[in-house]
Amino acid sequence: MKRIAVYCGSATPPDRRYIDLARQVGQTLAERGIGLVYGGGRLGLMGALADAAMEAGGEVIGVIPKELVNDEVANYSCSDLHIVDSMHARKAMFTKLADGFLTLPGGVGTMDELWEAVSWAQLGYHAKPIGLLNAFGYFEPLLAFNRHMAETGFVRPAHAGLILAEEQLAPLLERMANHEPAQPIFAMKAAEL
Image (cartoon, rainbow, N blue to C red):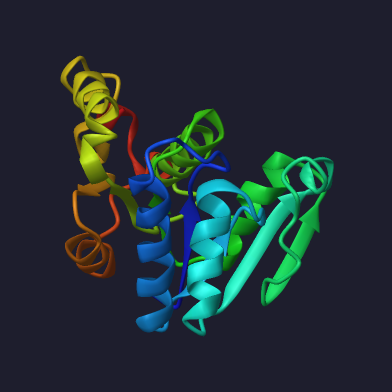
């Protein structure tokens, strides 16, 4: 993978572990020669992620909607900063620029980005790996709900494993690098749906 889109919060939670985690991810990606595509802000986890990647000499591409340039305080220190028209355009550019997706802890916006990546993979708009860094057990409820959707039949068996979750970054990056795409809905026959 040459570039990974990282979804994470623009908030700064009181628990410093989350900021430290974002910095570790940014530094690790840069050290491995993997470019970072992210939300383009300089605050919270986003800012910590980008700063650490840049400090380690990595490529950092920010993508931020024009309405959030002032609110999220756009990070003009990036290797490249794209200011786009909408959140939808932001997510589409993430998909275009990145070879995979990595989700760190975050809020509603982060979940929106994650679920769109999963939905697009199910449909066949992309065949890229979707990683979830379940540090500190942050995503346990989400993973339980994803299992529940599969167990009740709302997620097809072919797509139940689209989210690659690990508690540590190194094994997650390895799983993402070895990702085998699932059969997309667009390629399924009516009997398989």
